[in-house]
Length: 352
Image 1 (cartoon, one colour):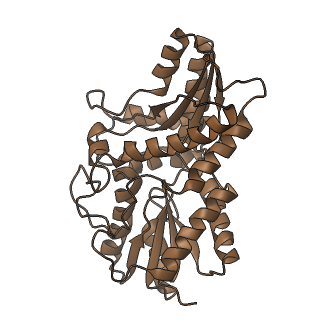
Image 2 (image 1 turned 30 degrees about the horizontal axis):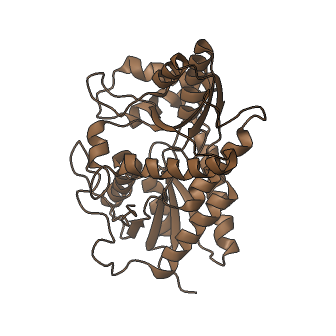
Image 3 (image 1 turned 120 degrees about the vertical axis):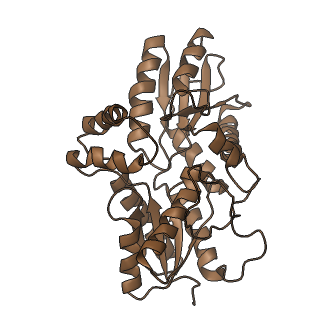
């Protein structure tokens, strides 16, 4: 079989592997954003509490291995490698290695399911800036966000159902279902996707799909809320709300005693998930007398990985050498609030 690409790069966020790497890592993450050093040190304590090692790198290596195995099971063999934005192996180094091995047309897949600057365009910039600074002659394209895969919602629902305690009644008035994701500035949310507003809209689609599956289990239509976590911007800048902790306190006032918290905005249980949900949200829930059930992220769930492998195989076989109009992300899609940078083409997301 002739493939349209000769390597697959999974592009991740990255994370520190040692306590000495924590502050330099955070400095790279926040470069140019004016984040006070004391805030970096505060966030750094989250990593230090976990021994200075972010679980995200091991989780992404496991994800790459699972995806590679799924591709091989479908008769597709090509290099499947990890490259990170903020820690080794860095994107420029990985692309240089692939070029040195003779690869010329590379498909990239980001470990983020949704449209938006930080979750999509910035990964295109990571790849584009790497090509610009290294002078490598490579054709690199980024696969569209994968929020629309039915198997993504199905995997989230499967894991949520498995996590529910036997004595919890999802349909009870005293139970609330919350879906959570990373908050972003409202301006970035408005600019997300070719037509704007895609970040929130795509999360609502996933949440609705998961809720439908859980409603079938409960035997009746469940209500739910989309909430946000991990805000990090200046106090005066509007970010997406409501915050998960504020929501828990409000639910307690409404006599809710059980909350099922489903993190749909993240691929794996990395530091932000562990700290913001298992530490801070759990502390808030305990304080207001709520039993909090936090369900797992999709990780390497075989249903999800298999469906993603199918999408990768489709692109590997067909390619986008001569895309039809609208097939690639528009130049202004998910614009960079700090100015334009070189970026590789991105396959346009499905906008339901």
